[in-house]
Every structure is written in C-alpha cells, then in structure tokens.
Image (cartoon, rainbow, N blue to C red; front, side, top):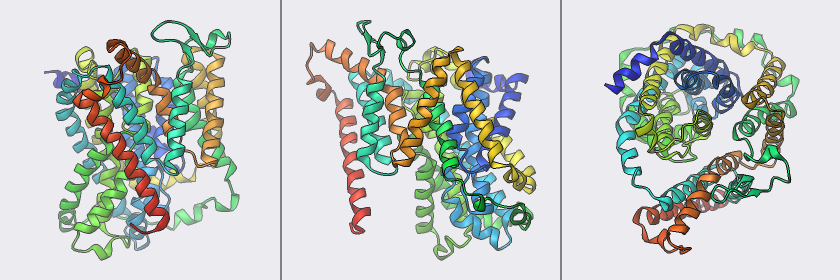
Length: 498
C-alpha cells in the first residue's frame, strides 16, 4: 500500500513537473564535459529547499539519474566522458561512432543505462527495508565504526595517494568540530564569531568544492585551440538507435553481470560509477566469446559499461538511506539535502519517514522511464548541446553557486564558506588531493564524535567494548582490509608487478 501511495505521489502535477525539469537539467549537465552529476545536484540543491521534500527530491533524483546517462553521449560522440562514470563508455562507444554506428551506440547508452537504473532500484526496494531493520539494532559503537569505514573507504578508492585521502578525511573531521559541542554545549573554535556557532555550513562548502572549484579548474586549463568546432560535430551522422535482436541477445550475460556487480560496487562507501563501469567492462571482456572486439567497438563492452553507469545509483542510495553513509559523492549531497529538511538518513528514517522512502523509490523508477523515452527521442539532436559556449557555462554556474549559497540562510557567510570551499577544491585538484574524503569527514564528523563519546560514556571510558561487539569488530576488520588492499594495489601499480 505504501509503495502504491509512493507512485501516486509521483504523479502529482508539481512533483512530476519537477522530475521532468531534473531529467532535462541532468541531461544538459551530463553532456557538457566537466559538469558532473555531483556538481549539478550540489548547485541545484539550494533551489529545492522552498519545495516539499517529495518535489525537491524529484528534481534531484532526476538530475542524478539523467546526468550519469547523458555523460555517455559525449563519451560516444567525441571520445570525452561527460561524467567520470562514462569513462569506460569511451572504450567502445567512440569506435562505434567512427565506423558509422553512432545512433546504435547512443541507443545502447540509453537502453542499458535504464536497465541498470531499474535493476538497482529493484535492489533498493527489496533490500533497504531488511537492512534498515538490521541497522536498528546498532548502538553507538556500530555507528562510529560504520562512519569511520565510510571515510576510509572513500580515501581508499580515491585517485592518487591513500595517505592524501586519509589526511583530508581527518581534516574534514577536525573542521566539523567547529561550533557548539554536541554533548556539553561548549563553544569550540568560534573565535567569538556568532556565525560559527552552528559550525561550518555543509551545503555551501559542498557547492564550492564540486561547483566553483570545477569551473576554476576549467578556466585554469582552458586553451582556445582545444575547443571543438561545430564543423567536427556536424560530420557525425546519427542513424537508427536500434539494432537487430540477435545483437541485443548477445549482451544478456554481460548485462546481468554488470547489473549485479554495479549495485554491489555502488553500495560500498566511496566507490562510484567510474570504478563500477571499468570493473564491469573488464569482467564482460573475460566472459565474452568475442573478447578481441572489446576496445574496438564491441556492443557487449558498451552495454556492460552503460549498465554500470546507472546501476550504482540504487546501491549508493541503499547505503545512504539505511545507514546514513553516502555511497558516492552525489549521495553525500543528498544527505545534506535531507538534513536541511530535518530528516536524518538512517534506519530510523524507514520508521519515521517511510512515505518519503517509498516516494524516492517511485521517483527512481519514473526517472528511468522518462530517460528511456527522452533519450531515444532526442538522440539525433544530442550534438547541439555540445555547441554551447564554454564561457557562458562558466558564468552561469558561478552565478548559481553564489545565489544558491546565499539563498540557503540569506547569509553572506554562506557565500564566504562556498568561496573558501571552491578555492580549497581547486587547490586539491592542482595538488592531486581527493576532495571526497574531506567532504565526507565534514559531513560525518558530528556522527563520529557523538557516537564515540556516547559509547565511551556507556563503558565509563573503556575502549574495550568497541572490540567486543561482533558487528563493530567486523567493520573494523573491513576497514583494515580495505586500507591494506589499497596500499598493496598502489604498490603493484607503482612497480608493475604483483
């Protein structure tokens, strides 16, 4: 009954309109290289705070799903992934375009992205409630361990040095301590500034790190001669988006594998579509009877990577909604959105806000169905979006960053936090430091601190209880294994030998 009500709420006129707007906005953001799903959701988040949660999330869910799908369009047409999740789509998609099958490649991108998205939504619907019921038994020590696991996993899977990721994760935790002590109510690190009593505002920092910093980085690396001319794009011919049924049938094994694997990867805190798509492409190549075609325009290869693009979303949302730990950077933004609405993601959400959970699941289904129709209908004009002037995009995004940050609380300090976040994010990019662990540390800092201190108060200051509880001990074991694996992988990569 709750699920039926969730679907009915999606068809409320305003909710459905905001979902359509989100899909349209996400398709534009995904197609334009550099404008990622994370940046889109972060920049548009402040615009949703005047709306009811169901309508606000309709727009954000539309952007999330649509941007990951649309990122494959540029990967296929011009060999440039629109979002990091579409990296593996360049392996076979561009080769198909060069041999005159751009339309078929775009059709595969749309159809299989929707398949991955719908399968992951099914997993979200089936497993989120049992997992949330299991998590209801968590105590302070379990929540502390899960929060630390989320930060260390994001540091472990981030590009570059694991040490750099851990440093920024700890830095995020330290910054989260600014404001009022959550247990005793003392002022900490406010330096007499009343604007810091509530701590560092999370959403403006996130907008700066994923929005403003990206624009600053693009400006710093801009070279006029690298801009794609309309002449190059005009030579691309988009034919039929459908292929023979025998070619679809050949993709069934790899599609099933990619659907399952991408959901699992998406559920791991810190992992994302880029990791899932590369893993699934590699596994599909091992499974295929025509592995020699991979990287040369393989339909199986492109189908597996496109399935993985959107297949991670359900897994990431499952982790976010049930445990309150973001599965990727976009769900970190969505957690911030929920918290502004006064909703704390976690097992209690499935008891206190069950209708919203059902609405989110229904929005996921409808977003994918809209993408299917919209993607197949507009494939022949998709190249037009690529002709938008780069400088126009920069100015538009910067304006949205400033206006969105100020509009959160009508506070100039939020704009200052956004600018500082943007400058830090730009610096992190230049120095090859991953911003994800810092954001996650800032987001989860209060959860880590409050649960650690509650756990210690229950045991009169003894840390032994943290290692006596089976679930906590298991999570600490996973933390150690993930870090050891990451360091070993880094060593293998550096030496070139196992």
